[in-house]
Length: 335
Image (cartoon, rainbow, N blue to C red; front, side, top):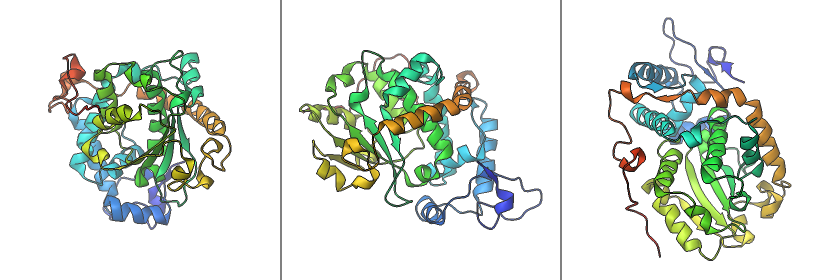
């Protein structure tokens, strides 16, 4: 639960004492996270309140953005952008703009809807609860073989992915400060999953999960990869930003021993040779967590942009394929 920072001025983010200073509402964080935020994200406790107020003023004055103004939410963007206000503005604009052109992902996100509930229960996206150190990147497990193409399509999987991401953005300080590492378990899945949708949608999805997302990637680890994985990896890299292509990208084949060199068994589920027990318990926990946050997730549907009121350049203006004009992937290469 959030705490009034006014009661924590010696410990949590407090602006310099000035007359009529507005209170901000954020969670206190552990000392190790404070140090990491200061050292790696340029976070200064004395300026956070002022920065948040400037962002809120910009959103209100933008005219076209219908966005959240909660301090904790906006603090996630500040951390993602290393407290560069210009980068925050750009990312927030992109965040709401891309969501507005993805109705198949961003609409009908009611976790009590029978179909949405069925997709949630598949457990394709599973945040894992533990890390070796409290300031390590959090771990997201993506289970390719949990994706049942006879039940749903990729946009439905991405819908649940964004639902989980919205809760992590609001609630998980370790994730927002330390970033996330993805373990992508392809299991017995087929690379044909990647070809069930058009390139335009893939490009939208990549923007949603990279340029627009405040959840920072720290690495990608593939396990149980199929023979055709070189093709899949080339598509994956072709969709990445240059920054993410420089992140750690490791294919472990079918070797759990190789995976355990990066992620010890103590923080992995049984299916990956770990000691946390079956992954289904985390699928169940996140199903309930999404249900508990139903009102928040449904409220997200009312947020976005009104292009008729925009006074600035659309951040996706160069992505013509997003607005109905055929496009190609210039960076897409096949071996």
